[in-house]
Length: 512
Image (cartoon, rainbow, N blue to C red):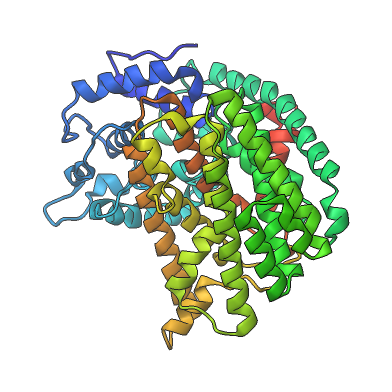
């Protein structure tokens, strides 16, 4: 199937584009989607006056903004009455409210109309889930409220929802819906054995290092580490080598975190941090025995990644890569000193350091070079600045969401601290609920910064586009990685892994 612009009803073309992107196969139709959205953008007035319903206005706003087109959020003022409130027909349009809620997820800082629209739509949709008679619709609304499309892995969260969306719009089933579902099924089934082979290679590499025999308390989670990489680069099945190499870096982020949290004394950790900063095999002799194997493996692996990048792209990034590891260890060291000495930080000081200790900077800088971006100018340099909004916001979302978690990660002993804890210490009399709400608002603000940064990235560079998507996907994975239940399990993550790697054998088996 090939998406085209329907002159008689251009909105149908946008609905098709949306369905293709939500099903996870949009990368096959980049040119066609670009043509359709550009044509729609050029032919329709910027003030949104061509959209007669809130559904159409919100859908076109979302698709055009994520494509990089300049569209104003003020379009939604067209659906307000003289009293400044959204009109009655908007309140009664469930499909329109849902699209409005989805559109607000692409907001930038300062777009107050989208803040108002999100509050308005989410309250009414939550009310609908309680009152609506159709359980299928209710489940769909709850899923979209918890996992809005822009902030989730839609290949997982939106599977088999084409028919529900058509029902909510009050329309008939489109002729393309069944072929699209079948194409999404084929895409997943073809990808599954590739992902399985990549995971097998990661297991062989990790087991071959033998580090878990030396550090028995350290996490041994190749599947979890690979899931980060698989999802970051989910939009191109051809990037097998890149996913595997990125997973190796992520594995060492977790390992070094455990060395600092579970093993090292302050003096030992200082020696380890200094050794990583020197990046010299001769430093092994100064390390405690239990650190030597891990240090050598870190240098071996990172040097090999740099060599691979040089052979493929003509530039050796080892100096930049080793600087990321030194920064990570210094951040871990700062935290270790805080918690060992009892001299706890202020909340903002903790967060500034925590964005580095999250490991996001290490992973995304490695990915930058693994994708061959070292040769780009201007924007490439901007993306690699340590305080780049793109990387910084992804790191903040990860760190704050981790601190929001209701359960500690397995085998962790509470040494990591929490922004909520320090924020409450900084603000006497503040309740836990108030502090938690503050963190939720901070995450929302970081998403707005991330949205703006992604919007500004050059959409016409395919490789930069992959990198932008990887940063977004890292942030999108956070709810799955940190949604612990009362038994310290991750049920949503487990379901996602089963979906992508293990079962079902066909799409029809999902959600049964």
